[in-house]
Amino acid sequence: MLNLSNLIKQYDGVRAVDDVSFTVEKGDIFGFLGPNGAGKTTTIRMIMGIIHQDSGFIELNGKDVNTLERDNFGYLPEDRGLYQKQKLEETIIYFGILRGLEKSIAKTKANEWLERFGLGDQGNRKIEELSKGNQQKIQFILSLIHDPDLLILDEPFTGLDPLNQLLLKEIIQEKRSDGKTILFSTHQMEQVERLCTNICLINKGKIIIEGSLASVKHSHRSNAVDVRFSGELNSEKAKTYFSDIKIEGASLSGVLSCAPRDFLSWINTCVTVESFQIQVPSLEQIFIEEVKKAS
Image 1: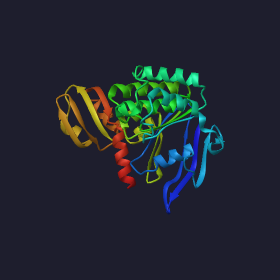
Image 2 (image 1 turned 45 degrees about the horizontal axis):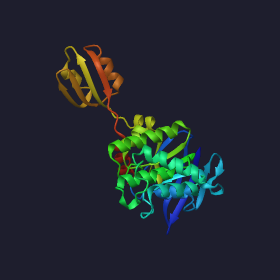
Image 3 (image 1 turned 30 degrees about the vertical axis):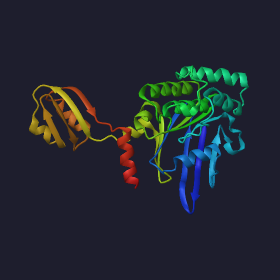
Image 4 (image 1 turned 180 degrees about the vertical axis):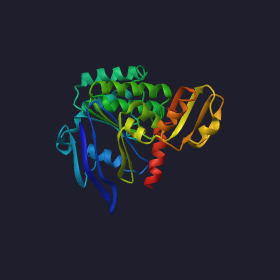
């Protein structure tokens, strides 16, 4: 379990991270979200020990991370840091050894991961010869070659085509099944909706949303509804329940001006309701709405 408590980091009097607290449970994929400059990368760098917080605590399984060796951490940074003149296989082996693996084990794992990413016959190619997408695959392999318990992924899907994004998601879900703790930062909201159980949205260093994805979406649902029905609907009466309504044949949609249960109580007396759906906004819509409000 990763626990951040009251983290503060400031530069020249400006708080880049302002009293940030959240917990990532073991086996969870936690979405850490925010616009550019929100404080995400600063927070991640504090977790990794690249910079130190001014105050607050970061604990992994109850222990201060600054007292721990980070060999059990895996980190995929947003900016690539690969040695362009080095060959794929020797690069992966080198980083595996840095993370505590025996050379023979690092070589075996390197070949296994290259095969899985469709690069099994390219181990002798130089990094600089690869496309951006394939370089991203190597960066991802480096973050998990040593099978870390804590995996931090900052924009992991950058440069990847849909098929390779699917492969990456498959691997991330496997790591969750293995009980790994995963902190996942991205601007691709659709990926968060498919992968994450819990999320935290920060803006200007402050948390503005934190909780389970399901509860966040539920709390942002509106009174906009879609209804399918059979029977003769009293259109004029229906309009009295809406601030905005559109009726087409056996369907209606609009924004209720009353509680949904009040409308349902009435409409069920005059027609057969085939379906009734309250529109739930996408995470991207929630993200935009909340960032605008916070600004």
